[in-house]
Length: 283
Image (cartoon, rainbow, N blue to C red; front, side, top):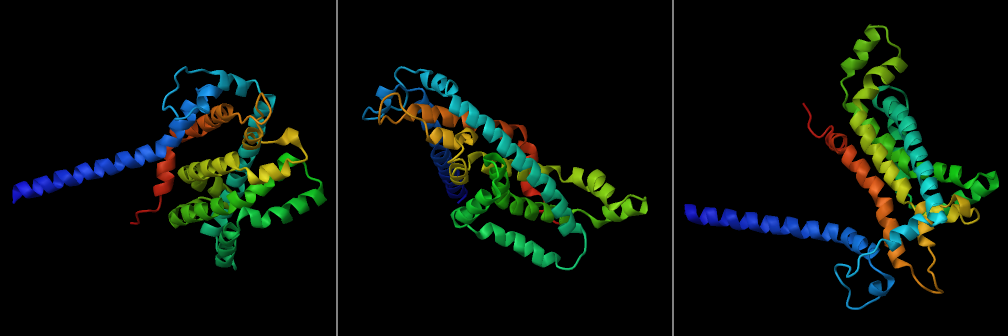
């Protein structure tokens, strides 16, 4: 009986690790394929059957990407837009999260549900109307992208930070008031530092969404090519000859664009885990 249990436990562990390996391969294979495609020549990219490792690895695609002025300009525009969206979302979201999570006022619960309802609308549903409003106001492309992205990043940020502020002990707020601190001082000097894991988590998700967004960027920069972000710049890569799809350069650009996101996740991984698990255990 003991042997049967040991054998069943061993089989279960083997099946579990087989499942883990299969999921890992499934998730990592697209990144692996993009990387090896960026190292292949154009002739090898269109060859059939496809090779799983470049026969003659080359950095030509990476050099072409960094020599492309449109890509470099798009990279700078993406940094400006994504950074602005992240900072504004965190600033506004932290104030709103503190007010909705710790302060008592009439209409607090309906306000939360209205904010949550804003996330239910797909981007394509508001694109035409928002574009018309921005054209009437005459806003430049980059500020219009920042404001439009906040429509989707701000509700999520407010909702998460509200839940985080609710989880902080009310005794902290009461003790600060007893010591003579104002509401603003309590928020900035006591409660806000405690929300660092949630700020990092929501800020990184907002940055990733703004960094990778394509539909709004393509629409709002259609009449302002200099304001194109990097996803649009990559989509408009042109080949050296007519009707050539520069697949290798697109993959090289994708690798370059993904590196900052991976670096941010590795740098803030501890705070991200803390932010995601905050409030999971009560008591």
